[in-house]
Image (spheres, one colour):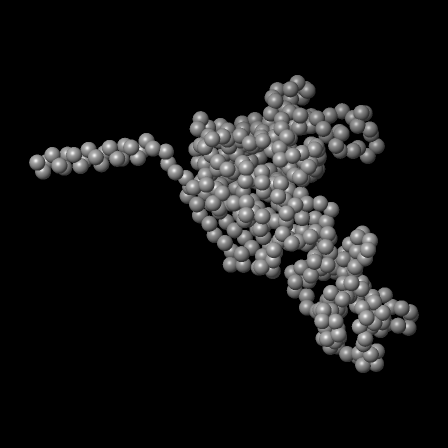
Length: 397
């Protein structure tokens, strides 16, 4: 009897194990960690079109072996996981003809794809509670306030910068400081006795301005010396103010601070970018004979930046460390090269398309706007780097 019971129990255990092995495994959805609500908090509303597309294509993305970490200042994030797709593995990048294919070279496209992803939000290290959705790339006063915090400038240092850079003496006999006091009275409606403050330190003036207006002095000075009804003039004034404080254009500097940035590493190159021949056309040897409808690229790294600029907001997707799926030595032409890249003196109709070599391609960048797309390629021809626009068209994700 005892032997029969043991036999039955062993049979049941084996049956359970076999059933478990044949059943479908459950994986959590990527939306649990990269959901649309969290994405919205990382960038401005102008990128909603991109977030909605990401939400759509990741609806059937799953993961396993997740590891996550966050920097102490909450300005960078790290994810490591194996990505799994179930229902489909091909996704269209809008109406551009470009496709994103997962596990293109495997018999089972649901095989796990290891990825390593890092995200950067530099603004968080300076403004932990700042709501990026309230950021306006055309509001220079808001940028002025952010810049001063990032550069760690106090009110006295900001005032000294205005006096040194922005104030022009009223006459050959007047000093910059005397003119500054006149500007405060005339433009800022700040009543300061010339006799009392001509030898005073800047801290006392900063304090007096606040006592009279209940507004910090830098805000008043911005309105006097930088603000303008003409946006180009206002931008020039901003550039002038920061010219000896930073080593680049202030608009590029602030864009780098407020823009969301991410990088994705693909150790096994499980992601393929398929680019149609209308954009990059493969040709045989040094002839124009077409040999393929698509160029397949397996990158090992992709960077995605939300470029928040005064002129426009753009998603830049840079494809780097390129592997051309076994065709790393080939010739190609760019059908749109002459149309999209002006020659110094030749008209496009008088130019012949050049045949190029694949080993010259360094990276390919997609610039996505809500209603348009632009693709650029960086090539290295004889140690000379050149960026070429290879595609530009209306676009809808």
